[in-house]
Length: 133
Image 1 (tube, one colour):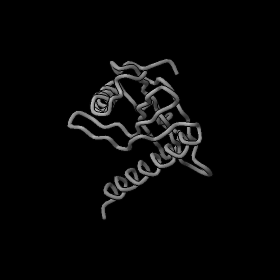
Image 2: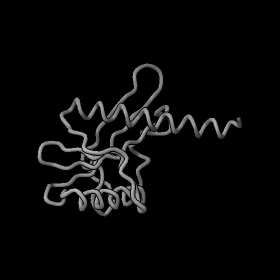
Image 3: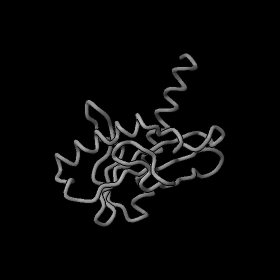
Image 4: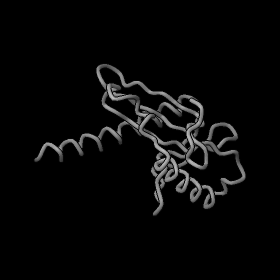
């Protein structure tokens, strides 16, 4: 198998593991996981959660190290807008428009030792503009 194919598999496996760890982390923080990997033609949201009365749509980003910056830095406006589109579709289909909505990012950094996990609440707004982290 070519190196680039192995790298893709490594990234995919790391992404799945990052999402698993993020869900466990969020549950430990009191979030209820309502849905995982909600996909639409316009985008995907990794985790749909409830934190108290707030509906949180969570983008999970992971990196093998922090050498190139934190995983949270990889969420650009285009990606944020795709998350918002998928989140909107989920909210419309599930009665979520009656709640406060927030867009969060969970960053998972692998490396030596235990993965580092960070939650960024309100990481971007419904227009995909970055929040104040």
